[in-house]
Amino acid sequence: MSKPPVHLRITWAGGKSFDGGRAGRPTARMDGTGETGPSPVETLINALAACASVDVVDILEKRRTPVETLLVDAHAERADAVPARVTSVRLDYTITGAGIDRANAERAIDLAINKYCSVRNSLNPDIPVEFSLTLNGEKA
Image 1 (cartoon, rainbow, N blue to C red):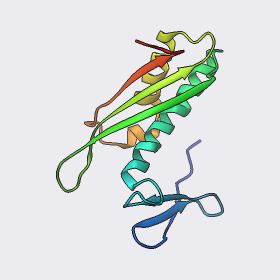
Image 2: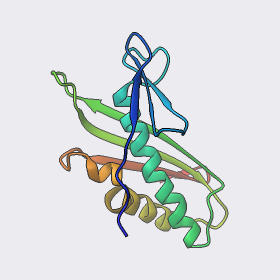
Image 3: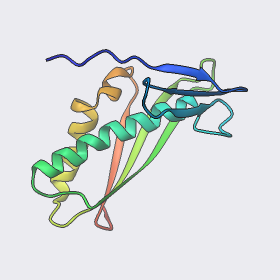
Image 4: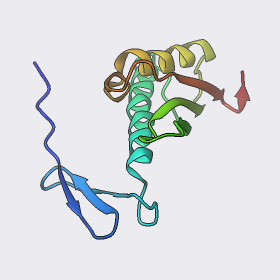
């Protein structure tokens, strides 16, 4: 069973602001100035972090070690040229949950980023995506 194609409508909201989403569903604001919403590049990095995090939560839940809280601080470096493309990304995960083993959480994050996340797999493979983990208050 294949995934249906994605069809989004992006509507100019004035200035450098645009609202985008599927018809009949909530939209997300993107703003090239960052005044009324994340920029398109910030939206891309948000999508990467959220996509991988969905998989992390699913993987840990399947191991019967559900996540209680999950926070990701995403950091992206950009080229000093036009276009100012993303050149590297670091995702710093902070996860809490009873019974979550560090090795299992790190494996879940690695699988999410490098195997399951469709956003990551849609990006240039030359862009490194690294991660760190603080688990139940302890950084590795």
